[in-house]
Amino acid sequence: MGEIMSLERIPTGIKGLDELIEGGIPKNRTILVAGATGSGKTIFSMQFLYNGIMESNEPGVYVTLDERPDLIREDMENFGWDVKDLEEQRKLVIVDASIGRLGLPSNEEHAIVDTSFDYKKLMLETIKACKSVGAKRLVIDSVATMGMYFKNPDDARLAILEMVYMFSKIGVTTLMVSEIEQDTKKYSRFGVEEFVTDGAFILKYLDTGVQGINRTFLVRKMRGTNHSSDIHPLEINKKGIEITKIEQYGI
Ligand SMILES: Nc1ncnc2c1ncn2[C@@H]1O[C@H](COP(=O)(O)OP(=O)(O)O)[C@@H](O)[C@H]1O
Ligand SMILES: [Mg+2]
Image (cartoon, rainbow, N blue to C red; front, top):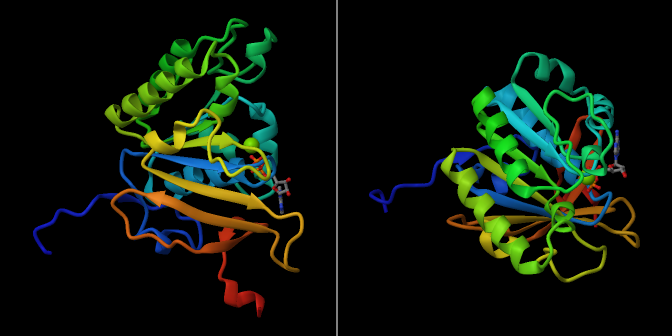
């Protein structure tokens, strides 16, 4: 046993999670974060970057395709995370690929303003941002949105494969967010994200829940890891996301 090299891991720092995955996400890999709208994907992903900066001194890059950066900064303030301050310290970069895609101007320093959304351009801007701060952690939120701009599913699949490869090469550990429908059994939009990524977290919002539990968290896969296969309660409180234990609910 002793001679087997164990994978280097990146702790998420999210309370209750790292102990479910042998201490963290395998380094330089890409993990899918899938869930319906409102399931907590954006908070989860930003918390991963925030903890990386605060606890491990690892700079991060957040690429947003859905939400505007100023709204993200505002929302994260509720958890006591001063995103703006981290950006000023050049520990965090937000790449704005949200409204620029509509041809609207962006005040952001790192923005993609291009109505004919160009995936290569997004890749280049992302890699540039990662290099500029020496990023160790990256979030793409979300690939589902990116997919709208591909002419066919094969193009989307190839793009995702290429991204996973590139991000690993530049040495970042990536969360790839995918928005899925509420009651679907599928974990990805293009039927490929869940296969090309090295792991998948599934976040669920239960609209008919047991009292006290209305969100759940599942490690659907994590390569090279003896991970929990249970469904865990997930809580969003004033400190952000916390994975709790079922016993806490007395059921
Ligand atoms: N301060 C907060 N306290 C508790 N819950 C919150 C707070 N802020 C947001 N939420 C919950 O988180 C949800 C949004 O989470 P978000 O990460 O943006 O979801 P997603 O990215 O999956 O669409 C909101 O709909 C709300 O239910
Ligand atoms: Mg979101």
